[in-house]
Image (cartoon, rainbow, N blue to C red):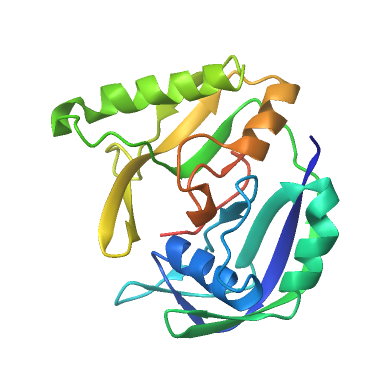
Length: 212
């Protein structure tokens, strides 16, 4: 299956820094009449300049990005173009959409990957998380090595997503040793859950993200 990425510039000022679920909810409400997004659709959280009070300021590099099968591109292009989303009271208009091909890279990163590991002890979480990453790669028939990323302070990049008041914990992930075909496949399908909320979104390491 061939996937394409649609990138929308944003006209607005601010968004919540933890906005993955809220963007999904806004898209579902505004253009889908509360119907869920198809499972094959991936949404990326929006990057911006960190601000106080759990917000980000939007800048020229801030974009809403969506990946979908090539045959669905026209549908999503038309549904979202020039749409105004209400994201927890922050209004943003989606403008100037662009299409692009996914670019292969031997190393890919994801800001946040989550798995359902509710019964795992806190200290054992990294072990079982990496085990889940490897199982997910095997399911996609991808041969590569998964790592938990680190933050600028050198600590494990443990992050959380808030969904209806519940904090979902995961980690930033790096996948190395990908061939060209597997690199594209991983960007198309991702790993883990909550992929409508910005999780499991992999990008080449040369891409810079300002997401907080």
